[in-house]
Image 1 (tube, rainbow, N blue to C red):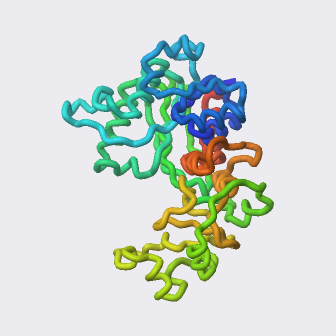
Image 2 (tube, rainbow, N blue to C red; image 1 turned 180 degrees about the vertical axis):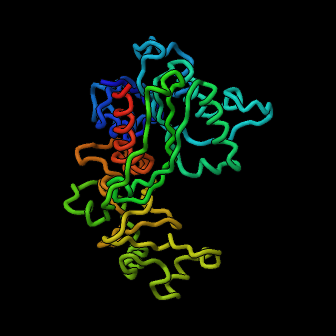
Length: 334
C-alpha cells in the first residue's frame, strides 16, 4: 500500500478521498482543535498531529513519521494562499518564508516524496497578477519536481456542487520516465441537489431569523432578489441595492434541479446566500456535507459554527478520490 502524509488536513475531505483511493495515511498535520477531533473521532488509528505547521516543519520529519527521505509515496494538502515577498527577486524558497506554503515546501524538500498533490482555490492562478503561483511552481521545480496543473470542477466528478479547485501534481524528476500522471476524466452524469438532499440524516443547523425567513418564503426555488416585490427586496438589501453587478447571491434560493453553489464556511452570508430549495432556511451541516460528498457516517466535532466551517473549507471527497486514484495508478505503474 502506498503511503501519504497530509498537511493542512482540516476535517478530512482530501484525506478521506486519498484513503478511498487506496493510500495508507501515516500522518496528518492540522492546527484547528475541532478539526483534529473530527479526524481522530472518525479515524482513531490515524496519526493526527494537532499543532502549528511552523512547529512541525522544523523537526526531524523522518523520525517523526517513521519514513526515510525519498520513500514517502505522496505528500498532499493545500496551504492557504498568502502574498510572497519579491524583495530579493530570487523567487525561491526564502521568498516564501513567513507564509504557510513555505512549510509545505519544507516538507517537500526534507522528505522528497515520489509525488505530491497541492490543491488550492482557482484564484491562486491570478493572485498578485500570477506572481504567487509562479513563485510556488518555481519552488516546486527547484525542489526537484516536474509539474502538471489543472483547474477541476467538483461537479464534473460526482459532486452535487459547483466548486473549482486548482490541482497541482508533482513527480520527482528522477521518476519522470517511470511515472506518468493523467488527470481524471469527467463523469457523464453531473448530479444536482435532488440527488443528495433525499433522506439526509438529522443534524444541527442555524435557522434564519423570523423576518428573513418570511422574506425567503417569497423567493421561488432557483430565484433571488429580483424575483420578489422590489420594495421588499430594497428594504432587505439596504446599501447593497445600489451596488454594481447582478448581485445574484443576495436572497438566493437553490433549486433541486441544480447543483449547490460553492459550500461556504457560514450558514448565512448576505451576498452569498444559499437557501434550502424546499424550506426557508439555510442548509444543515449534514446537508452541506452531502454537497461536499462526505459519507453520512463521517461526523464533525465542535460547535455548530465550527462544524459549518470545517465542512465549508473541505475539499469535496469525491473530487479528492478521483485525483488520488489517478496518482495511485501512476505509482502502481512505477
